[in-house]
Image (cartoon, rainbow, N blue to C red; front, side, top):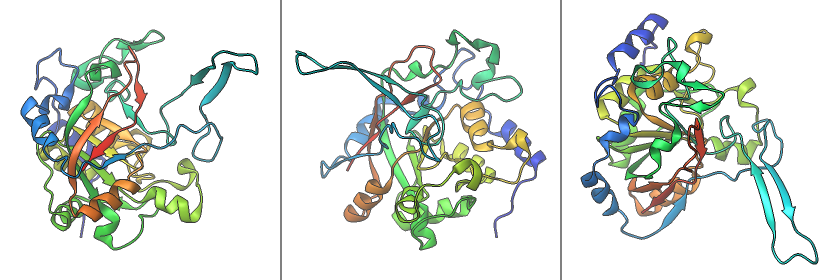
Length: 304
């Protein structure tokens, strides 16, 4: 039976998993340093069937319980006499509606971001440290999907349902894929399958399934490079006070320097992995080069 950590134990865990200084005091890439050229080449060899699967949700322009800040799409030049069409998109990538990559400057703990940089490095000008453009060369590595509903023999996890380290271990065993140094780890909760059947819900009111704080040492030991989820990785609500409302975000982004992919669509990938009976694949993602930005909308790709 899994045991939840006390708030004091969660805070102590932050200190134990801290990667500050691991790659030098000026490092802004964090766990991306685990991805070596050899790791990328090994990941490329997993593209055996040549099937490509997008892991992204559409950038919706419609307001919904999940999407209180929809994408703004305006046509700038169009009409019966136009010789071209031009448009404009305005996107607030954070939240629970769009597939996006969190920069390491997105979350603070004790007024610090990853590697001990002050939160004063982020202001109206943007982020001077740990901004999203540190990923300008893209992220390519071995990807691994851990399909937690398959472990629990259900279609989806319910809002507020936790995932414990024992279930990550069980998923590895079930799928025959062990998470290793430099991997892109994707956690499926079945959130989008639930929406398909039950309709959209308000995550801020009803919650989301996600990783319990006790999973942080597991992620640290495996030296995960990037963590992605079809929810936001954090369990919501988690029963802790506001200070620890998102311990997975703090533990990954701030303490370990692990970039996060929120709101991925992992349904097609789940089906493809089951079809090929293989839960490892080539992962590729090219975030936008948004200088001094705190996130980027992304379209991650899995190649099986």
